[in-house]
Image 1: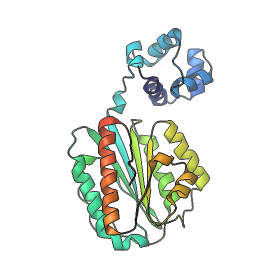
Image 2 (image 1 turned 180 degrees about the horizontal axis):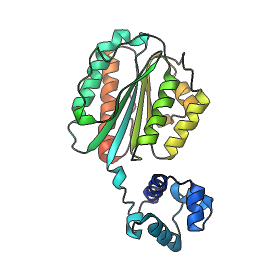
Image 3 (image 1 turned 120 degrees about the horizontal axis):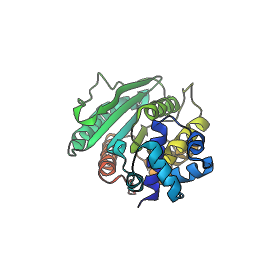
Image 4 (image 1 turned 135 degrees about the horizontal axis):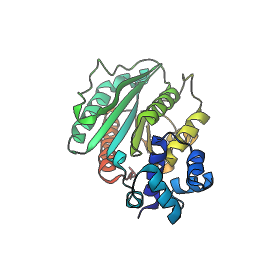
Length: 264
């Protein structure tokens, strides 16, 4: 019995009904703190509450205790990629790394969906929750490096967008950049940190890979955990190697649901 998965399942059932924790608590005649405790995996509902939960959501108690998360039968990936002017000399390496990633993902037969967002002065979504096995290779008509670095706007807009449509809590967000934020207009660091902390609490995984920047300082400022950070060098070999690491992380996450970043 996995208390954390049970909590995530209760949250999925609640959010699918469009209920707040307080509204669910009122239906069950418990406190909103009790619902929060269940969903965070810090405790299990009492037997009476389990029965009431099962009746309310039209599932069985066995479904609840086994965390039968049918909506978690697939994985969602969100890749947020720097396409600012400083990436121009690495264009072919980014394209090659992305295409190798796509090819490697076809090794698995489970369901996985990919959203890919490019950012420079603007934020552009090139794939939105698309079956990863059906995505065509990237080329220079898609990836064109130019402009400045609206990193915060890319993270904020894409994470919130995916949060609205994702039907799973098995979500991995990978952010890759080779420069500091310098042109976002909609999101502040503090707002991004709140969003990432909220989604991390929901079970999402966030990986930050950076070059030419203080990765620890930037990651800390936006809420990325210490064991989810990767520093790489802004050159072809390191860029290709980093893409390989991200692909391996993605494969492992699809098969195990776990993340382990080995030190260089």
